[in-house]
Image (cartoon, rainbow, N blue to C red; front, side, top):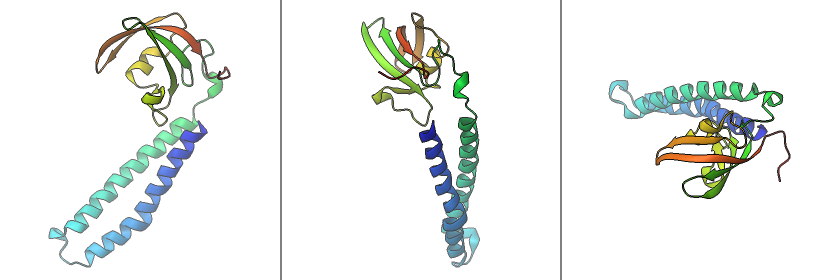
Length: 156
């Protein structure tokens, strides 16, 4: 969780620097070109300023959400954030390992899936032995949770 907080804080710091130092210089430089009605540099800098301000709000909100996560309230017997699961794909008859993480940590090719992804959402709250039907962009997939280790258990 600390890595997510650091990543979000780094993005926030970078955006704040752009908003308060880089963009004002660009806007001032663009103003020096004269007529602002037809000044593409000025319009681009003002548009970027608006985008940066909106992203700062999003990052601050997300940082607040992440900081409010109470790891002690995560279930010890059901799939939740931090769980490691082994799924048995009922059609392909193969096992797949995933760890459920935040969207900022997500790296599906390395087995890190977000709790808000289609598979992550379908798994949330389920127990070992449950069958899960997941609608993915490639179609419906059926899994059985053959192993579950929650965030409270040591990694193998």
